[in-house]
Image (cartoon, rainbow, N blue to C red; front, side, top):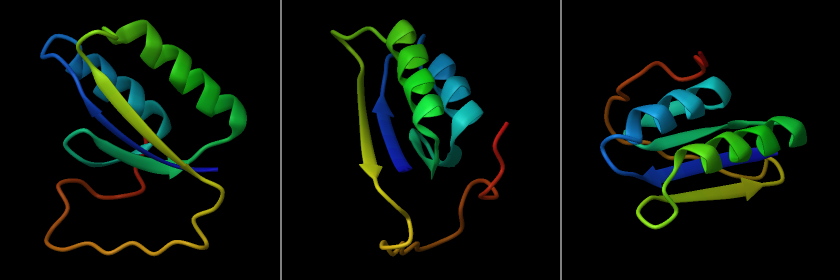
Length: 87
């Protein structure tokens, strides 16, 4: 599955969320990630994020697409990081 993840979190939890997301997905820009995941890795990512966030203050949106093949992606400007690099 192809995943797009967007989050907004408190200052203390933001670096932890960033680090966790970078383990599984490509960092696109501040608080935005994307990438192909297996079902198992997707569940593990969600589990790790649930352990980090404060559900009363933080917000994570995950768009799950069945395949990247049927989508198009348009970008404008220079990306902050080279795409395709996962820690």
